[in-house]
Image (cartoon, rainbow, N blue to C red; front, side, top):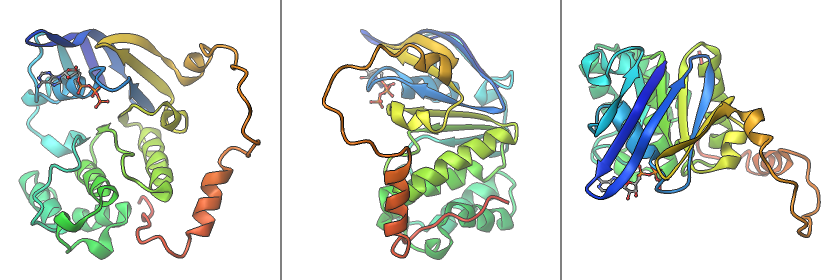
Length: 255
Ligand SMILES: Nc1ncnc2c1ncn2[C@@H]1O[C@H](COP(=O)(O)OP(=O)(O)OP(=O)(O)O)[C@@H](O)[C@H]1O
């Protein structure tokens, strides 16, 4: 569980996060939404002890992140997929993380397989596409098999197969009883992934409710010329069929 209480961050004259109090419950996917610049990354950075709150607190399973010690076994994080030494291979990167967290080699092979990077695991990360780096970031988050997972904009750069895989992964992780907190500025993405939403704007809490309740706030549809109707998911399914033999990365099964 993640709990924030009156969490606030001021940078000189900018109040990036303004008195946020919310709880992220285990067993469901919680989407963290807000427009660009609304304070999502700053909130996540405070939860992870990377920014010191000006006021208030953030706890993960009752403790401050910094006070926990057990690292990747406690919380899995994808914050910035670019934050990897470009000269290292994915395998070397994960091996180093595993070693410093007391995690065995076999787990590295397992998560590489799960995110679909086994075949390119020995290539330098510098040559990876953004989507491949996102997959590597997700692999790092899964490495310690943690009860709490935090993903900041995990869908960025993923292809449709990757997006579908990531959605299913988040839902499975939640079904396993884990706390799954996923930030995005794309409402449409959360529609397929989240059970619950925390929505912020200008650093303030705007909504903390189920997806269904939030959807009920929609005004009556505007009268704009309609695009010809396409069944839900049909475009994505068509894309997957057409590209079935040409996709380079396909995720493996979750054990
Ligand atoms: N280190 C910093 N110094 C000064 N201002 C900052 C700093 N970090 C963030 N801000 C400001 O705080 C506000 C919130 O930024 P933040 O990156 O948390 O938003 P965000 O919701 O994650 O945005 P995005 O969706 O664009 O990633 C913005 O006005 C930003 O300019």
